[in-house]
Image (cartoon, rainbow over all chains, first blue to last red):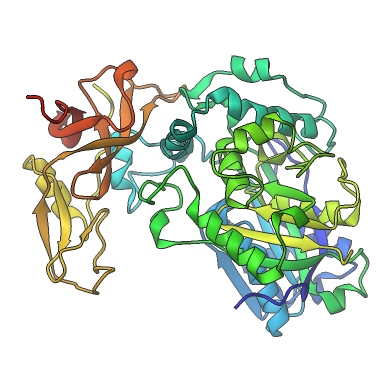
Length: 387
Length: 135
């Protein structure tokens, strides 16, 4: 059973600056983002009675409460699978407020992913002592970075439809174009050309170049979720959660090591998430005004454009080349620059951008946006503003 | 020779690595219904069976996808080719391709298993097999 469309709302958003070296603790980043989100909603820390974060976030709930001044909480939950679960955070918070388990839930994700532990380096920046359970199938053979791990999936997609790395570059050019006019973005005022992309060094030849990889960033983001009924009386324009779901299926077998699904030229877990969202809301891809698509690497935008029905299987390269994902066109994708252009705050910054688009306060505003998709492969959501 | 991070066998998969040390490619086969599952799970998802056998595989299959494993900050002396191998028994497995030039690797090419020792770590490796009908 799905969440009741429009019953929960995003009442507040907050974030720190996005950098490569924050110069402060991860708990401070979380605290600053949470305080900002609560203030944005017009609430006080004492109004918050629930917290949600990712299993991989190192900031303890009680430590955050002590730092921010949240007195008591009746709800705490965490979502699995890192950035793939970035939209599941909203599903958790909405379940809490619409069931009455909590009144106001704050979501947080904060880390020094660039200046401290870098996920993108071999062996997680040397933090791991030998392979975690399940990694013995991969690490001994050389799959020791996310870029390699995911490329072994993307290669099948490229081969199936005859894509080259230049096709992926056309997404990056759009993301960097959008970031260039977004003051929050790390790559503000720094657009690239396709030639720049093609001159960046190979990370996994011939699949990923450096400019196909998301950034590694320091920063924190937070959102406040409450019921739509209550949000109407708060400070900000109403932004509702029309649907939120997770998308996990046995066929995918493993979120990162997705090698066992029947057809790896598709993203079946995301297709499942898409069916859930469209089924719960009665909406179709044509009803969506902008899409925030999680991209740890550029190819997963292609797989998700297809999984969420914006184009057919194998059509994403042509769809992007023809300009359909640009602002003002068919389905603007990541108008803030996404995780490649703005920052990599594990996808949660994409959700805040969705909220801004619906408030009409985005740096690169999609004119008249009234429904926004946020997709993170293994979780996804649709936001609305009642228009 | 590449730096190899050794596997850390756990209760549900140590049979596989014991087999590899003996140059056998094994997979979990449900004792009740025969379903092959790789990576193995303690329970058969088809029938719920907890009893199982370690079935020796033919080691024949084809390349389903592949990459060259090379990280700019920690390059191997000789970049390895990592591949998803679709085995003829209907399961997939990640391993390396060896004895083949990168420019000759294609999806769907036929391969066969052999075993190599890397500083005391034995790993299954695959190399091109003669196309069917040739010897």
